[in-house]
Length: 142
Image (cartoon, rainbow, N blue to C red; front, side, top):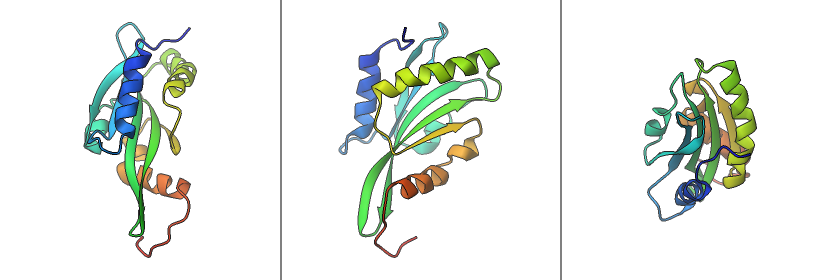
């Protein structure tokens, strides 16, 4: 049985992040007080997304970043699973089983991350990994 409260709402947030003409670059999906996954906030600034990653939080995030070089810019997507360092073992285990349901709603991404330290999902780290997953760079900018 899925623990997602509203798949349609979650899919709408995912689709908004994927739109080329949208300013929204990230969406987070969080556990509510009933231990169910619900759509959280969306936003534009990457650091605002990182603010959702608290030590006691379990968060799934979907983010759009622009990668490439001066000859080829393209949107790439990352799927981030955040499990804060203060999350209990039982809740940690629940995340691993629930992640499969979340990924059914948002199946397209270039790179997946699992983190409990914000430095592991800092914007420059995620951009570098997406760049590696994105294929060839033809330009000279590095």
